[in-house]
Every structure is written in structure tokens, then in C-alpha cells.
Image 1 (cartoon, rainbow over the protein chains, first blue to last red):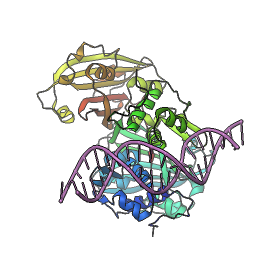
Image 2 (tube, chains in turn green, brown, yellow, blue):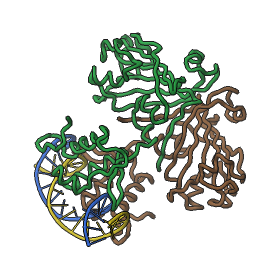
Image 3 (cartoon, each protein chain N blue to C red):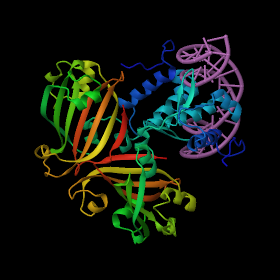
Image 4 (tube, rainbow over the protein chains, first blue to last red):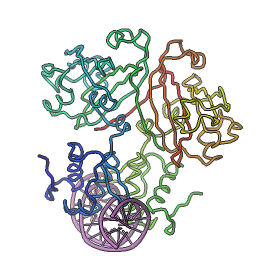
Amino acid sequence: MFPDSINKLSKLPYYQQLYEILRQKIILGDWVPGDMIPPESVLIETYQVSRNTVRQVLDILVNEGYIYRQRGKGTYIAHPTLEQTTSRIISFTEDMHQRGFIPGTNVLDAAVIPTPEDIAGQLQIPLGEELVKIKRLRLADGEPMSVEESYLVHRNCPNILDHNFAEEPLRQILEKDYGIRLVSAKQVIKAIQTSGNLTDELKISKQAALLFLERVSFSQNGFPVEFLRIFYRADRYTLYNELHD
Amino acid sequence: MFPDSINKLSKLPYYQQLYEILRQKIILGDWVPGDMIPPESVLIETYQVSRNTVRQVLDILVNEGYIYRQRGKGTYIAHPTLEQTTSRIISFTEDMHQRGFIPGTNVLDAAVIPTPEDIAGQLQIPLGEELVKIKRLRLADGEPMSVEESYLVHRNCPNILDHNFAEEPLRQILEKDYGIRLVSAKQVIKAIQTSGNLTDELKISKQAALLFLERVSFSQNGFPVEFLRIFYRADRYTLYNELHD
DNA sequence: TAGTGGTCTAGACCACAAA
DNA sequence: TTGTGGTCTAGACCACTAA
């Protein structure tokens, strides 16, 4: 299991250890949205650190939207908001659940290809390099929602084509079999017209508008790992966003 | 001018006062990107507060992307990144400058209208209420970039139609004449097909795709103030976004 | 070696919510 | 009145950078 106390001999700062401890409790469902977490005084006792250190950790969790504080009352687990959907990396499955759909996947294509020029630059690899291309049709309540094209550097994930991409989430495969975690990403959002070849897959008209997204995802080591193109049906999919001053 | 010291008798916490002081120096260009700001020890001396208080302020500014720290070296003014464009409220003018265009504006319409049903809900006002509608064509390097429709509650800004919306930024008018600051917003991003009536204004074909955005902006008091629709030419405008785990 | 930011402590007083 | 989070202080030691 996950450690539940702070190792004072570790090189890791206390606050980072405590952060991981509390974060795991939230992620693993030990605490659920609406729950009050132990007051600062108890956390101080439990983990044998000062109030400033506890507050440093809680500040981070508040900033990340995991918890919220109410003066005089306590600190609570936050309810996931739509805001997080646009700034956190989430899977298609998770996204659809948040939107109240039942997700589904059909694999349209899975093959090894030579790197196209436009993708080579995005993934910072030479043109000769082999890529794995995985093309999937995504369904929501059984109806087409989007087409996704994933491109992975073959060298990073040999034999990945042995997996069934309709059943097993790609991120889970990368993490379990290759030790690669996708921790950050950059993406561009555009509106485009269908170029014709997706009309059948998405069940849309020849001229329909699509919400189009290109994303480069980076591993925990900071290297680009995946290039992703998503074509969303504009009549079914919208993005949501919160802004501040 | 803006106060440059902390009022220890004020009800405002020190850290909020110091935050405003430093933020103004950045915004007004007193410090420019790449500049090193005074070390914590100097800020402590200058403003007569403890190190924790100084660091509390710097933490906020780091979080908001205004500054970055380098251990052993110093704290520096950050260069604005594209990331801020999608999570901060910025004006069209500012946006175009960041993208390397020269902005321009033509006013297409400015009038008082009764509230349409769909907007009444967004602005949380009754159907009978009067709205000010301002429709503007936005240009980048002289070519059409987008059409914006702003809707304001007339009661909040009487006589606003006397202004020249091609010359004076709307946000500046609201702040100077009516004391209204737009501090947060929620928006939805979609892809749509032109409905025909914008083809002339945007110089696009009858079936072109548009990036479409609907935004509700809130004042410092938390009330919805403006409803905004923007129709971007999809061939000229894209959104950029960074994600994390 | 001197100066910077990074982490941590122990203690204080305040403001707010609920009993 | 009690317990919660909000703000603040003074001091300490460490890790990194540059001279």
C-alpha cells in the first residue's frame, strides 16, 4: 500500500510527502466529494509537522481544485467541476462520464508507419523513425462522437500493437507496460470542415463543421510521447472554460 | 498615484496590499519581462513585513504566471506565454498583439434592445429588461478576423451608447465610467457553420467553418455583466491550451 | 564565500461558524 | 464558548548559483 506517514529521513521535503499522502486519499476514494478532511490541528498531530507545512500542502490542493476551505467550518473535498476538464488531461472515458454519456470505442486502424514530416517536428524525432498509428472511432451512447488518431514513437513502446485498443485504455497500457506516464500536454483547438473521408465514420454531412484538436503529450521525463489528433462532431461536442483577470 | 507602502492600520491583510503593489509594478511596466525583482530580504526591509508574508505574495504571483523564481539566483518577471491567453481574460487588442497582428475595429451596430430569452438566463435578468447590443467587426492587419456581439444590462451602464466603440475599449469604458471591472468569465467553445449572414462581413464562403465562443463575464461583485458571442474565422484563428495531470 | 530562494518550526492573535 | 481556518512573526538551516 501507499505510505501513510512522513519519512523524516527521506530527501523528499515533508510537504511533498504529505501532499502525496493526502492526494492519494482523494484519488483512491478514501475521501469523497463533500467529505470534511481532518482539521489542520489533527493533521499536525497525525503527521508530526508544523502548521505552516500542513497549510503549504493544503494551499497546493486548493489551487489544484481538490479541496476547498470554509473559515470557521473546515476543509472539504471538492466536487469535480467542468473547469478541470479543460485544464486537466482526462481520458475519453472519463470525459464522457462527466458529460453523462456511455463511452464506446471501435478500432479503425492500428499499424506501424514511417513518420510524416509534420509529426516529426511535433515529437522531436528524425523522419526515418517508426511510428505506431492508432485510429479509433469514439462513441457516446452508441453514436459517433469523434475520431482519434494517436501517434506513438515505436521505439518507446515495442509490441504495443498486441494490445486490444478497444478494451484497454491507451494511457493504462503506456503506464503498466512501458512505465510512461503522460503528465502534461499542449494543444491547439481549431474549427474545420470535414475533408470528406470522415463523413461515413462520424455519420455527418459532407460539409459539416468539426471541432479539431491537435495535442502533444509529454511524459514524466519531459519528452514528447504522443501526438494526437481528435475530430469531434461539432453538433455533439463543445469545450468549456473558465477565465480570470 | 498608487500607494507604494503597506498601511498597517488598514483592514486589508498585508499580503493583499503587497500583492497589489507588486502587481501594479508589473502591469504598469515599472518592471518588464526578464527583470529581476528585489530579493526577498529587500522586500522584507522595504515593506516591513516578515519573510513568510513576502513569500505568500510571491507564491500567488508565481501561480498567476507573473514571475518565476530561480534558486540561488533571484526572482524574475515572466515573459507572457500563450498559456495565459486561454485562461486569462484579455482584450481583442492584447490578443492580436500577442499573435503579431495589428488590431482594428468597425462598429456594425449599437442599440438598445429587449432581452432575448436565451440571454436573459445567462445574465440572470428578467425578460422585460433593456439590453445594450454592440456588434463589432474585428480586423487583424486590416483583414476580417471575427465578429463580436456584446450584450450589456442597460441599467448598469446608462448612456453608454454615447461612446465610440471603435476607438475606446469596452472594458475601459465599463471601468472608468461605471466602476465595473470584469474579473472572471465562463465560456463555451464550439465549431459551427456560417449561417449565411456573416459571409459578407468576414469575407468567407457560404459554408465555411467558424470557431464560435459564448462567454458570460462577471464583475468584481460576482454579478454577470456581459454576454458575448464571438464568431472567429476558422482559417485565421485558433486557440492554444496547456494541460497537466 | 556571499547572496539567493527552499523548507521548516513554534508560537501568536484574529475572524467566522456553530452549538 | 469552542473549534475552525486566516494572517503574521522571528528565527533557523539547507541547497543552489556565481564570483
